[in-house]
Length: 204
Image 1: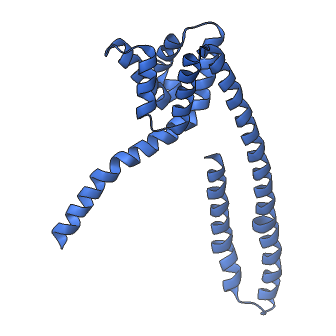
Image 2 (image 1 turned 90 degrees about the horizontal axis):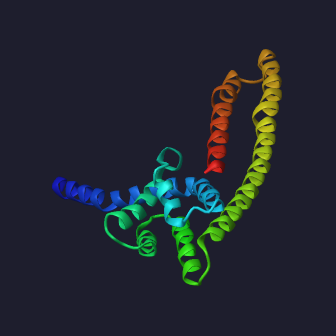
């Protein structure tokens, strides 16, 4: 039984580890992609050719992280493996774990194949991402305002009033101290932790 469990554990590790790594990379790419597209757009607006844009992006790993690593695959395919730029883009579409990155690159390919220029496409996509990010931040601010109201009402003013009442009742012998202790050391800390976790999910 122990051997079987060990085998299953090792097999599961080998099976799921690549998927977990791909999921982690996808998250990092998606977080940095809007900023990378802004960089691509700025380069396109001054007339830099698409391949050179991705080459510059591949060298900007400190700012664009995993997106730069994706761009390095394009540069590698062109400079080392002899693919043309369009083929290198197709290769990236096939291997990138990010659906957003895949859609962005596929859009560039489609634009080029339909006779359009990638530069204006990059600029338009950057504007769309900026608008999407603006709406997201507006929604985030509204959500944070609601959370702040809940926190003040439910975990500051409400418990404070309740603690004052319970303190008086405890002093008069009408309520056990355990209730006051539970509010102070259990309900308020757990509620605050829950608020912090919830705010963290809003930023994802």
